[in-house]
Image (cartoon, rainbow, N blue to C red; front, side):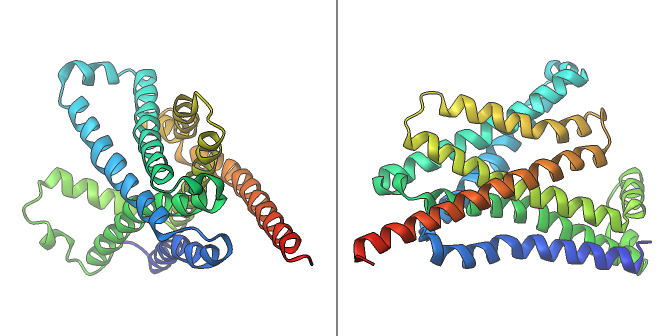
Length: 272
């Protein structure tokens, strides 16, 4: 049985993550003038490259006895998990931003393009990986609280149902806090990756894609280490909290500078 306090904390954390990309979109679009298309492309790229292609890759790898045997090695599992995430997401981001630049070359001169794309990409992740999954657990917790969970899963094997009960019984207010940190940090990282790639594409940096793949893989390392049971979840989320705050501060300073420069340029043009 999940306590009322835990349910309240999980609900609040889920609502905060659900509202975050919507609030940022409504607040930042008038300031930085990005197009809806930038956001939509970010959403589409994450949905296709992460939810379809990356998951398809995992399914293919895990269906092969040889690769499954190799992944029993924790080091290989961590390397595979981090690189798979980095390659799929950054190839998608590269393709999406290249398409935006080809469609409208001026977009490479507008920092708002990276922000809009990042909100779309990160917002899709927040909803598809965070909000929808958390809503499912909230539903299960509510059913368990009313002693209806077993009736709801009558066709599920007893072992799987037992694991579900174990997970539900392990949920605490701290679980909600960790979820909030992990999802908020991921959202910030996606905007940071988008800004970094936008700058590299604008400067025609030759190694944009390899650099971004490695950077993303490094960020994915803590969660891969946790999945390999090499570090606790608290340690992984502590890393994300620290680096998330660093990236958030850097992004804030960057976009404040962009805004100040734009205002100064506008005053010069009007002769003020």
